[in-house]
Amino acid sequence: MTDDVQISTAGGIQTIRLNRATKKNALTAAMYTAIADAIEAGDANPDVGVHVILGSGGVFSSGNDINDFLATSKGASVPTPVLRFIRLLPRIEKPVVAGVDGPAVGIGTTLLFHCDLVYATPGAVFATPFLDLGLVPEAASSLLMPARMGYARAFEMLALGTPFPASRMVEAGLINAVVSASDLEAKAMEAAQALASKPPEALQAARRLMRGDPAEIIKRTDAEAVTFAERLMSPEAREAFQAFLEKRPADFAKLRQKG
Image 1 (cartoon, rainbow, N blue to C red):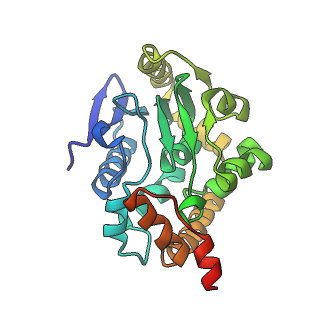
Image 2: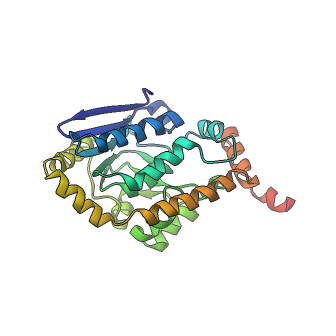
């Protein structure tokens, strides 16, 4: 258990709130475990019809906690709690609604492609800087982002590393609506309440038909994880992580000179 994730259930809605605002809701292994446990429990609970994911403190999530990630991965593999979470995303059985305010970085963006409804504030910013860390996309984002956004915009985010404001994510088809920060949670809960009032079996059946067979998504998730683990051992990743910890720009040119 961790206090960095708050779980509550009321009116058929399970709310999962990232509660580590002092660290910009960067996800630790314990947080990944808590979220995955909650989703699995909610899917198995007949009293839960909808999952809602929220941030706190004006931040959705700054992505993986780099220090925690390196400590748990030992530089050789994707940490088990992370892999468990991203492999769970395409298997979620009940609708997922997300409310995004402030930064949504890395997994903070890629998990949204597994949600059914996403609302964001004008201050929301979406970024996937995997390549800047010497890594590759995860959570099947290399498959889902081009399919949803088109290749050009997906490449701009995943390879060029361009952050997208909420307005561009509406155009890209990820966000349903942009609402004020003061109205964000109410809007997300309103949508969740509407879903929770639907016939649950029909809702889940319709969702399964619309989302299709998750096998391809899981296959891509696993393929990304293999490459991600390989990249963790690369000189590029070591330089990127060291630069991050030292709060300096990464110098990939020196690696080319050595080569």
